[in-house]
Image 1 (spheres, rainbow, N blue to C red):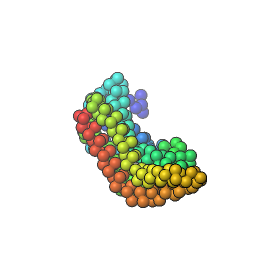
Image 2 (cartoon, rainbow, N blue to C red; image 1 turned 120 degrees about the vertical axis):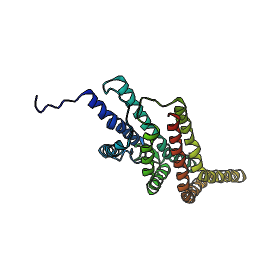
Image 3 (cartoon, rainbow, N blue to C red; image 1 turned 45 degrees about the vertical axis):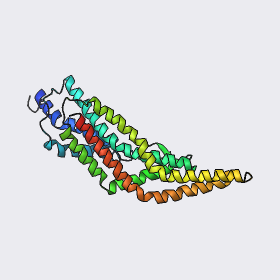
Length: 263
C-alpha cells in the first residue's frame, strides 16, 4: 500500500545497534550521576542531554555486533548497557555521598544532627551541615569542569567497553563493591578536622566537669562545641577543593580499571 512504512528486521537491528544501545548506556549514567541526575533537573532536560550525546557519539562508534532486535540476546545487551551506565554514574555519585556522610558525622558531633533539610540532589532529608558540604562540592565540581570530565569518561567507555554481548566480569563487579567501601574512608578524611576539634573540646569539658562538678557542663559546653564546629568548618573549606579533586581522580581511575577488567 502506498505511503505505508515497512521496516525490516535488519533495519530495526541496525537502528538499535547504532542509536538505541548507546542511548541506553548514556541515559542510565546520567540518571544516577550527580548534577545531571538531581531531582531538580527535569526529566525532559535529562532526556534531551542523553539524546544529544547519543547523536554526537554514535558516528564515532565502531561496528556493533549483528544481533536480531527481536531476540533474547538483544534484551540481554540492553540490560548490560543499562548496567554499565549505572556503574559509571554510581562511581561519581559515591564522591558526593562521601561529602553527605562527612556532613552527617560533623553535624552529630556539633549537636546539629536534629537540624535537617531536603537535599535537592537526592530528594531526601540530610543534616544542614551535610547539605552545606553537598552544595559546596557541587559548585566546585562545576567550576573545575567535572561534568565535562564525567562526559569524557562516559564517551571513552565505548572504546574500552564497546557495545556487545560481553558482560561485566566478576572481577569488575568485585571492584565496584570494593570501591563502595572507599566511601567511608573518604568521608572520614573530609570530616576529620572538624571531628578532631570537637573531640578535643569534649575531652576538655570532661576534664572540667571532673574538676568542677557544680558547673552545668551541658549549658556551657553545647554552645561552645557548636561554635567551635562552625569555626572548624570555616578553616576546612580551603581543603575541600584538593579533596574533591583527589576523590574524583580516584573515581575516574576506578571506572577505567573496571572497564579494562571487562575487556
